[in-house]
Image (cartoon, rainbow, N blue to C red):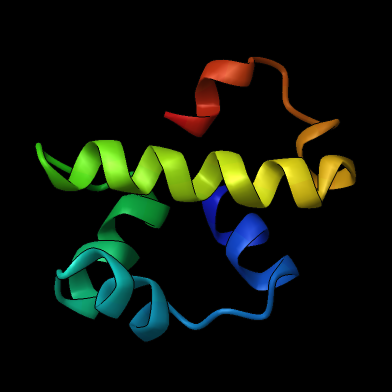
Length: 70
């Protein structure tokens, strides 16, 4: 879900990583569900996902649980 939102906005993992101040590998692991962002990156990542979800509601409409954005 996180990766689909990122791709809908045509962002690379590196662009997201640069915006959040983390390594690209961290974003890849977050998207794969292998890890979760820690503070302070968690809040910034959630905010980014919420912004993208607002722009691309068709991506989030397939969510079973809106908490998947977190």
